[in-house]
Amino acid sequence: MYQPYPTSGQPQEPERVQQPQSVHNAVRLMYAGAALSTVGLILNLLTIGSLKSAIEKADPNFTASQVHAAETVGIAGAVVGGLIAIGMWLWMAAANGKGRSWARIVATVLFAINTLDLVTQIARPHAVTALIFSVLVWLVGLGATVLIWNRESAPFYSQPKQA
Image 1 (spheres, rainbow, N blue to C red):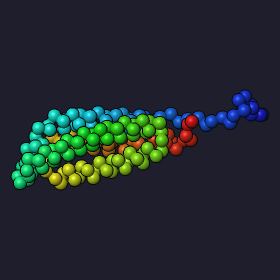
Image 2: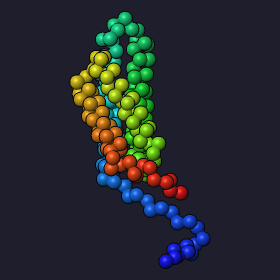
Image 3: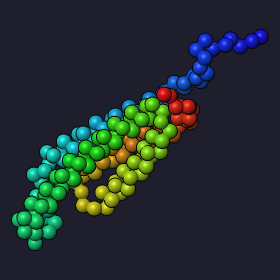
Image 4: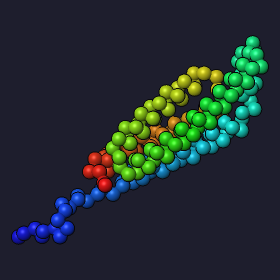
């Protein structure tokens, strides 16, 4: 028996492994993480009014200009941090959905950073609702991380890159 000669003159590419259900579910969780981060950003913006009183309560010796400066930094930090979080969730969902092996590592590092942030949030004064929300986002990240490192996912990440 003989093998038929490829008609295009190009070597045939190996068949791509289809996205397993574990990766599909992880990507869905990452999109849910982006949605939760969006809700969190909106909630932060809706509760800006309480920021000024929290700053004044934290240090009653602040002048009006110091309170204003701290309030501005707090608002800017919340907006920039929220937009970065949303962007990271969307980026990781897209990259992991394509089976990029580096994306599993980056997503895991981002989850580790989120874990450290959650621990520090628990250690400092916080609103209970903000903590509950942070735990929900962390749980979504945990679920996605477990799914992308699942045995079922491994072949999808180890296949040759597609052009």
